[in-house]
Amino acid sequence: MHFSILSSYGLAENGTFVSTAWRGNCSNGESFPHIPSHNKLLPCARLASQREEEEDMDIIVVDEDTCELVVDGMEGEIWVSSPSNYSGDRGIIKGEERFLYVTGRCSDVIKLPNNQETPPHFIETAAQNSCQNFLRGGCLAAFEMSSTTVLVAEIQKHEKDVKVLKQICEWARKDSEMGCQRYAD
Image (cartoon, rainbow, N blue to C red; front, side):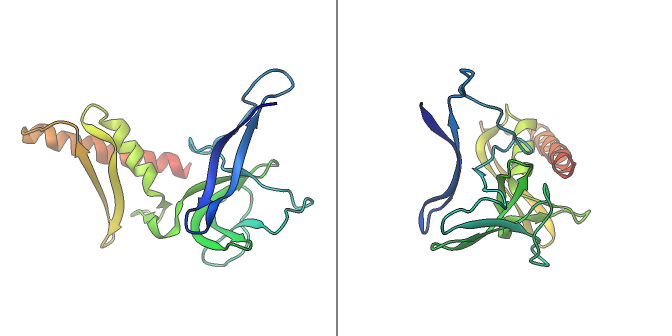
C-alpha cells in the first residue's frame, strides 16, 4: 500500500511536525478517500477519539477567553501538550472523525467592525480572487492597525491610470468583505 502526506501541522521551532493527515489507497481502488474540508482548508490531522490514547501527545482546541474546550466545529486556540510544547495557533476540530483544521495564528486574527474575528488569509484570498488579472498571487497581506483592517497587495504590472487603481481597490474591498461573511457562515 502506498501512502502520501496531505496537510501537516508543524512546529518549525521544535520539530518537523506535530500532526499530519495521511492518504492511502482505499480497498475500492480510490487513492483519495473522502477528505472533508472546512472553508476550503484541508485537515492537518485526524485526532484520536476520547476513547483512544495517543502516546505522549494531546491536541485540543479551547476558547481563548475562558480556556474551556470548544464544542465540535467551533474555532479556538489550538493547545498541544507534548514533550515539545507550542501555542499560538487557531483551529477547529470537526466531526466524529475529529479532523483538525488550522485556521491561522492567534496573534494575526483581525477583528472586523461587526466584532467578527477572521484569519487574514480569508481576506487575502477573497481580494486575490476578485482581481486575479491585476494582483500578484501570494503577494497580499492583511492585518489590523489602529482598529482598521489593512490590505497590502502587489500589482502584477505597472498601472498608471488612477481610475483603474481605484477600481482594483474597490473590488478587493468588496470581495474581501464578502469573503469574511462567507467565513462566518
